[in-house]
Amino acid sequence: MTRSPVRPVSLQDLRRIAETLAAVRGRTVGDATMRSDRRQLRIDMADGQLLVVGVDTDESGRPQLEVDVVHPPAEHGNQLEVRFESA
Image 1: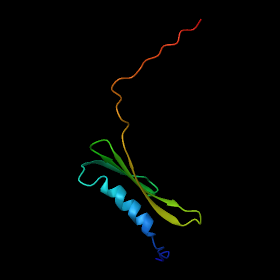
Image 2: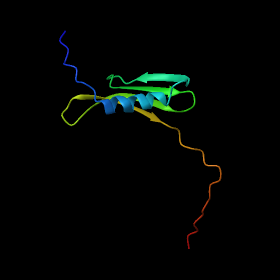
Image 3: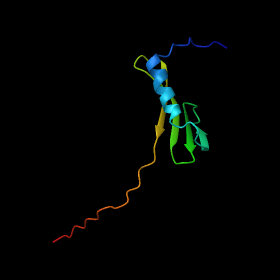
Image 4: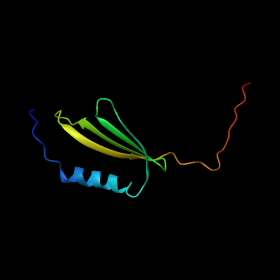
């Protein structure tokens, strides 16, 4: 089996990934799902946050690791209800 050459990861990318992973440190994992093409791993945290780890291509077509934390929408306590009446 031939492996493609490994491209060095920039320090900025490593810092961004480390900060993202630190945001979910110590949290409980509720579920994990891998896409069938293995390009994305979705980790559902027990507190409603999602950790999404994926591989995308950069401008030159090389694979690039992406890591994001998606926070659940904030609950709005008091919402203003506006009704429009038609004439």
